[in-house]
Image (cartoon, rainbow, N blue to C red):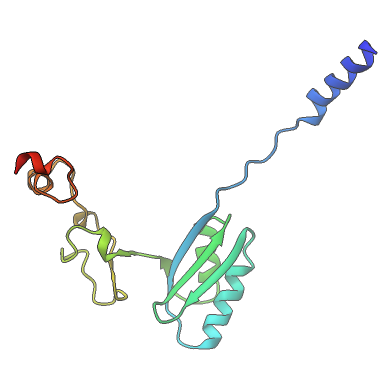
Length: 149
């Protein structure tokens, strides 16, 4: 039985363990699309759900936002939405609470949905900024702030 086990193991190692394709990570793709009516909403939802790898599609017409969850690449989903004839771009906004300086000229946008500001590098704090270190020194979130006061 030694030869049979050897041949069996060799066949399993060499033929059975072919390289498996790595699966793309599950991700959420958010796209800004201007939609006017129920027909536009339905057409975009059908187009995005036909993309290979998309598990679920959520359309929010009030915010002009399409959210696709699945294993699809953002560029493929964006191209599919643009193929419907609508102008589309990746979601350019971040929640208001994430940004340190929401009223910076590049971040403040009147067209942004309520609670969101435009994603701009000037709106995010710089770690090396001296005013940031001083404000953190007396912040409630700093556990060592009591020793300073």
